[in-house]
Length: 396
Image (cartoon, rainbow, N blue to C red):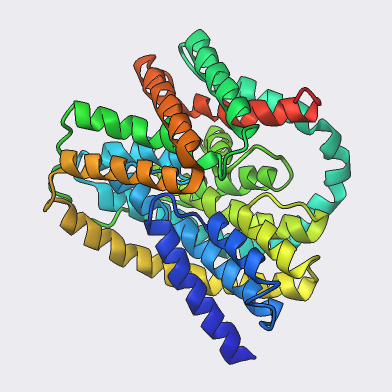
């Protein structure tokens, strides 16, 4: 059994690397695929092996998905905020440093997850019943907080509201994987189009390992990330913003914080599944569908898998970040942006159809409008927060 677990763990790392590096191919798609086949083609496979595969893939994905986000401006649903400081460092020749900062955060988060997992189980189980009725009000508070941090508050409110209306329309549509065109347009293709328009030139990249005190940003992530274990509509991006209010980081520290929250949110989603049987990530949902309720032994297995796959993924990220940094200068970045944009449109068309492409165009224009208003693009996370708040108040 041990050999099979190791093989499925390694297979998860390989597929997680693939999903992390290829824009638009998310672990949720692989999870849906596994759930579908678990009752037919994979029915003879021990469900424990599939749990190992999914958890290994999910943790690996949280390390690798910052590479296309920073180097190409192609966000995943959890890395959209890394485009802002990451792309700025990339234009200064420090794209490698930007990726490694997120990797440091993710690696620290893995060890932190192991340390605080069981104390968190005790704490969350005690407070969840009290807090669950307050969830929509907490989401409203966080939304107000996001807007209040802006200098141009009315413009921020406009962007938050526009993206919220767009989110309501998209999430209530019947298209497949509605978040793919929505978030890709708001945070990815909008920046790509502006890079093409401005003929952005990426300087030669410097392979330099950063030196930064990661304790503060990781502690900020530790405080904020558990929120996502029981607050729907909040992802690692919102957890990072809340964590940044606590640790008050600069751009480099924020990238560490993003990496840490991205991995911690994934880890806490497994803990949340164990405690309250709620799934906040596609990976946790797939495990629930395949395995059902988790025992403490299976949760412990997932944590061990997370530790091993996290350490391997860290070194994979170091290698691949250096590889892409060296190869990036061999391409015309404007042409590369055009090719990337076309690939994104093709992926959206294949996954979400022609209506997905229409949503991608509308969300891209919304993203460009937000940039022109000179407000933080984090306000566009209204596309998830407003629909969730409305859902809790039975408005939708």
